[in-house]
Length: 407
Image (cartoon, rainbow, N blue to C red; front, side, top):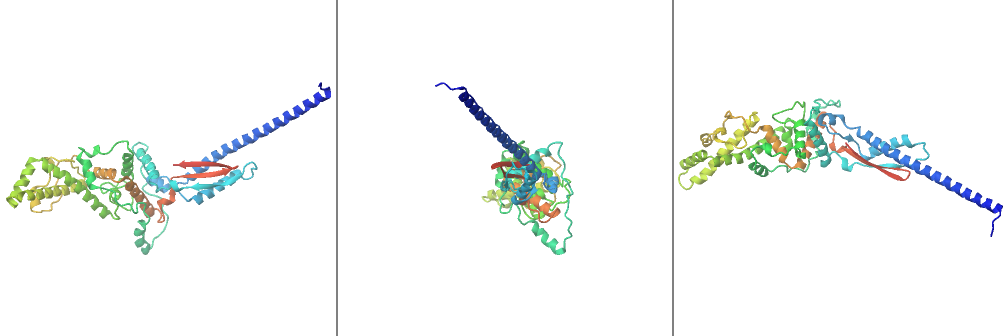
């Protein structure tokens, strides 16, 4: 069959029309795809910007005093801000359908131990560099003149809702003794470059102890690092706890020193024979050795608190107390032998904070920050109401855009 010229022209017209419609469809599809790509890219950029804006609302007092970043708020507050930001950017744009947002802050609360430790490690690393900025002594106060009743109840309120509540067990003296039995100095205990090493650096940059205020200005406790180790609600109790721990550890080491010294063993044996001649002398010698080691350990603590150093493992030249005073049960003042080498009070605190339960250590650091912020800033401060990051999902044109951001 042969097509005439009219049929040929009709076929060409149909082909051209189909081709034109195809091209137009492709152009519209390309425009739509380009538009969606542009909307998606813009939305992701805006989500990142809005997340940064929310994180930028961190508490200045918390940052300047403790180098911890956290913004106050609950998921509802963040969602309201996101909706406000979205309205300003999307309203009036027909090609954008904003479907709302939802926010989660559960994993980013500042009382999350892992999240909080991340910030402490960063701050601890910074404290070892020339970029370290000393904590602000004075923080912005909320002006409020407290009545006498408020002052009486204020102290107790400081200890309400502490992050460490219910976590008391932090330290094992027997475990600490075992660690020290295998080292020649405390410096052998901490591993440089480890997370605990940097956390310890943070502790000794941002908190006081009985021997060093570090120029940190006013705080609720004077013995803050002692609180981290002991967790008591008074400086006296915390200092007593540190004293007991140092003496207990020193007593074990000093017992070892006596047992290794022939001269000291001979003195103990001779004294025991005089007190209880015969078979009972051996038992008496054990008691005298323990009493002598305890007396020396008590003197060691006094030396440390006075700013002196004490060798971890002593020789006879560094031994301060005499057996005669122990036998007479005489309480002596601090005896200094003139040997000022070994570890100081701060070294013992570093050792305690290094070997204590890491979770309890972090929670008590949180306690101190919350206590001081409530004591110096405003009495309603709760660390759990502050966040070190956020996660939210924003629906635009039916597509979920997720954003996760931390300090």
